Length: 487
Image 1 (cartoon, helix red, strand yellow):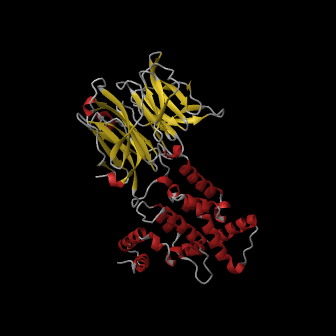
Image 2: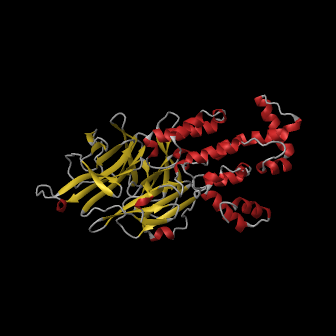
Image 3: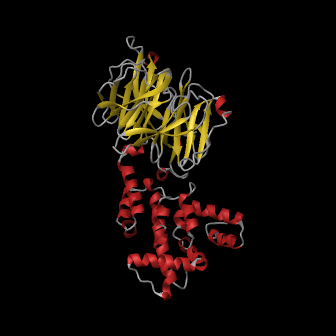
């Protein structure tokens, strides 16, 4: 089989129901999609095949623009009555009366006249335009060029289809607003296997003499070590991602410099290629404190749990600003973000029961306020996001979702309980497509828990639990990594 004959093999394989031949030819189509999409045979594929091609992780194209252009070419293909495309022959033959009836209703609404002589052709063309959203929603629209998306918004088929128009608009907003790219990826922003980048979860473990940085590949379902240089003598190591930039906050020992009056140093670094470049911030805050590190839009926020201070760092200008102090003096257990808000969680006891107090900082107003308490413990909790929501996950297995009430106030809604034991050392959780990955220190009680849920119908098709043998695992963050950094 070669590039000259794989289409013929595919046709013969389909004709004689040879799955082995079809599968090999299919891989040729995926790996040579740019050239294959220019073939007339591509235009004759049934919708089911085009959907499989477009949504495949293994599809290889020069850019996502090529995929979108191929979709539009397939949609706009207008067969004639002498050569109906194979994509609709079966539909017309088996469901002719239903389609005719359906098409008549659509034509009545749109005032389109379809004559009896070419009614089948009218059905075919109309049906393809109805497939536009199904195909576009499976493309990686967030990875297409800005020019391509703007061109799509001006296309007549898109302007007349609200679902597709909204989809393209959301992709443009994703590109323009960096805050939408922090913390999670919509499926339309997942890089294909052929990309220079890969959507992964990044983790850091503090070893006795250095910090180990590794990544978990969702597509390959395994851990990878990285070529990222570690920090010797690091006492504290925190990570924050701003789009494709990775930052680390480190407290390092004096052995790295000669200053007897400064036994420790608090530093901010940015990952440049496979090495760390120090950002010249000047923060007059003691290093040996409990810090939390998060990102909102272009800025990094540093919260000091002991001194109750909040700092905003601008990695581009290296300017720092001290903001309003944290109102509570309780030790912070977890920090997450929701749109332009930073949520801070503390453990409290109410009538002998463990509850979670929640403060939030409004980055647009430089003000703090308080939410209602959350049931259950704050210690050991983590958070994650998907396309629609921000979730909290407690060590007890309880999952909560942030919701907006009819009065436009934020509140917490209990979603489900994933387990019944106490998984005290949760490091983090990341969503990938419609799957949820939860990472934490090895817990024997978890594996033996009969209530452990492996899915959440309608939300997560699979829930994957990843356990670490080390107790030093401290984070599990979504990040888009350059594949060159993976060993």
